[in-house]
Image (cartoon, rainbow, N blue to C red; front, side, top):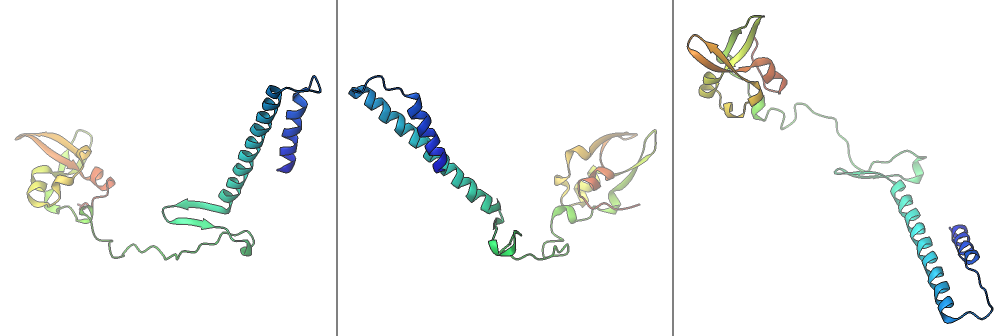
Length: 168
């Protein structure tokens, strides 16, 4: 860093030409201001380099905390937290309204021109399923029957959204 500061100062002095041996106070003030500006720029560059070194020392910061490198482990990263295996059947595994299976009694077969589709009747779900209000709107379809239009929820769409659906 001292080399850079010396280089900047030498360029500043080389750029300023002294025309006479007796410089007036205005020229002296300009020279001092130029030297101060160069010193400030050199200090900012030095501080920036220090911040980069500090950033390189920290591998990553996240909501789990930062992981710091230590010099004793030959370049490998050291983690100071504990790691436990993922447990699918942990204390919160069975919770959530999507984990409650949809009632099989509401499962209907909708006959289309191409093939039959499985769907859940909207009226049946609203009567027999506690979380019917939380079903996604994008899975809702209106089907024309001989009794008028009925609302159904596609079984494949619900299954893709994470709901437990019944099989035929």
